[in-house]
Length: 226
Ligand code: SAH
Image 1 (cartoon, helix red, strand yellow):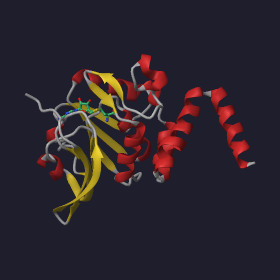
Image 2 (cartoon, protein in one colour):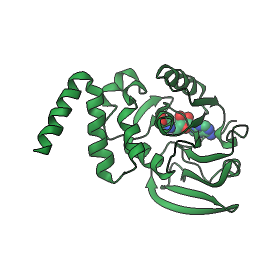
Image 3 (tube, helix red, strand yellow):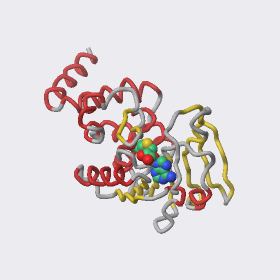
């Protein structure tokens, strides 16, 4: 009986906004189903219009269970990976978060739905500028995008409660670790392009870094300014 009501609600929403219906389905089948429980993260994933942050011709694939190309050889992560990384920092509404690798702006938008302030650095100017424009048009006033090498972080805006790195580095950049608040958490994929990468959680505890390995992942490479 309960299922019938959910189906009816789903059909009503699908008529209003087909993309919202797909988001609700995405959260059920790809995110909640795989164990993400944080209510704020689920809410943000139901809300952010991912189809408006991918190239127009790919909008219809935006809610599928996979990464998509966003130009310049870069990708927007699979929705589950965005939800997982967001949940790992235990986001709260008073937090200030740094993201390295703005890309499409999608991860920044998901963070912006939950936390107080998002700072995001992108090394490819065309991507960073487009993301900034898209995020502005979507009404996100609490996100700042900077073009530059994220290796240096954003010292003028730090220290941060959490840092999310969305490109795979050989090792955690020291300037980023230095911009973590006491108790702050950094999530970063570590490893080279041709080896297995691993998602790592680093916590700044009494000035010491506590490392937790979280399993194999696949990200585009963290590049450096020449
Ligand atoms: N978070 C993005 C994922 C984009 S892919 C999203 O939600 O769409 C990773 C991004 O990291 C790419 O856009 C790439 O250009 C960027 N990147 C790689 N190395 C970087 C660096 N050193 N500093 C800043 N951005 C970097």
